Image (tube, rainbow over all chains, first blue to last red; front, side, top):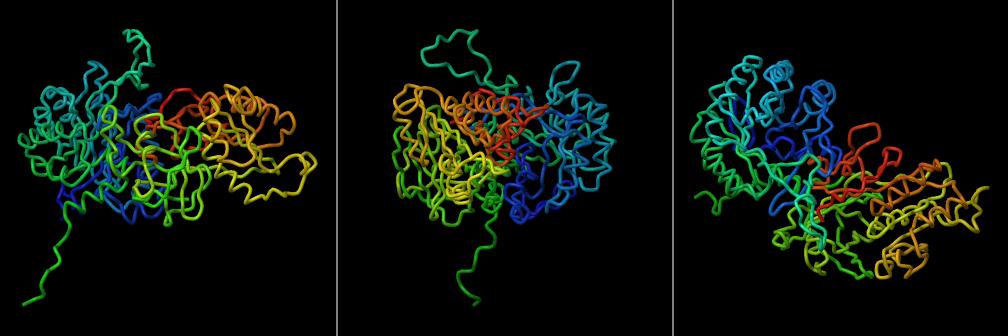
Length: 303
Length: 283
């Protein structure tokens, strides 16, 4: 059931969504079993930025109907910290490593891609374009023209496969995917979380006046993930797969093989599992196994 | 102790009433022996979801309150859709469990007495800690100059509760001095009043504490002022329990954040400027 993806041969089509599985923390929690039974066929790192980021103030989570709103804020050690501290450990994982990066300008992105390009431990790069342009405030990935320009400006900085992680918070996601392809992306991945808001709960009997209700999450708005977004993900992945010729990584609310199969059937090459791993750390392996139970054992012996 | 790399479907051995609380007993003969202070992520096998606001969705984090004879015990209080559903479990039903997770308590050093300070449902990890400390040190521990054996046991337990029904939870531990907000049982006031009294008598202690944030902050502050080592078991809203989601952070002294699930839940009080009072738990 191995899958070809951008020149990589993966054991099965199930990987993790960026930022939903910390392999190094999982190694400490679960020991050697993490490597022996690694649940994904490739490992996508959390988003790395040029400078270290502490992440957003808590609270960072809100449980939604059939899902989760998070405002984590991309905490990471920064490029230098990632390369020096995390990369050597991630390189020992039993699967190819995809490093996810984000920059707020083409120059920043170029620097990130160049640094990753020199690392033989990194098999592919995923570019998170759900980052506000520092000048316009709009997400780089939300505007097809801007996305294509940025990608054209940085594409030559790496010879490694470049995956663009699209934002679902755009008017026409398929147009963004086309722009990514035109800009030189080798693959696209979607969907990222949907922008969402949770308010501080009303205390019993309290009046619901506008000034009394503040965002619950420390970062203000957050992103919705989990089964609540599955049907949206299916629609966006289908629309994108129809419009582009490059491989598509589909994700959004996948919690069992049936959901993964839906995404594959509308044209995804790989499927990523995210929030379900929070509930079940071996969800990726379970879904991969359910997708391909292996050859059925013969009922009768040879004639 | 590392956890088995899989959530496991376990059988409920029983659900016991303990005043305002419930003690969920789960059969777990294959489980790793937990360190005191470690926790597990729990979800019922059936009807997890579809409650108020179509919740619960995520598993919930619970300190392991006791571990004996192949059974894990958890202390529950019905405060939301997740805890409500777990409280409905009955013997013979199934529960998903992932654990034991996180960093637990470490033993007292330099012959210090262990002073356990708990509040409300947060007394849970102090029960297994008491079990472990009394097994480790023995109540007949040799007296030192500052701690004559006749008056000071190796482990002192101080527990605070809102009211009488909750104060019945104190029987989860042995020999506790109890304080209640309404005066129904024991000292009429805060458990930190009892802590101050104990420290006046003998400050050569290590404080172990778990409970509501304001109580933990008061404990932290008292201990910091008097230079007493303190280990605090924190609670935070948590999606995964094993470091994946980065949701359960608390500010670390000197900048940045600690993940309660993998850096804690037991955190050295010296790592914190304060215990923040935000209610983070999706319960």
